[in-house]
Picture (tube, rainbow, N blue to C red):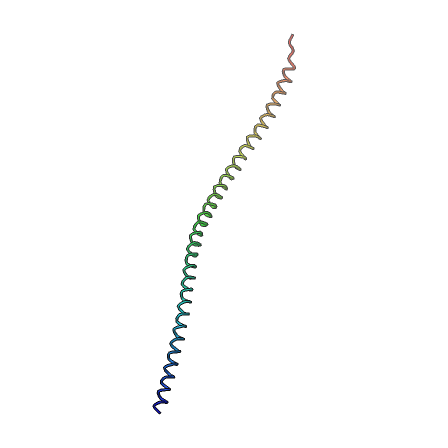
Length: 117
């Protein structure tokens, strides 16, 4: 009976030892998995910081583009306004030239009536 109990104790001790080895192997696998997760998390964090920094660069460039588009729109409006003014001056010159031409024709006609004796 004592021998049987000793054998049972020895078997239980072996089972406990095997279970401890399995737990140690499982703990090691968990530690390795956590290390991989930490590396992946660190990598993601680094990339997120880069993306955030690049997004600020893009944001600034977009603001500059919007500002430049506003300046371009203002310049285009000014050009349009000045073109209309030039067109008005050209039209006035055309009218003035017609009047001048008509005036010269009248003068020429009148001068033609005078005869020198």
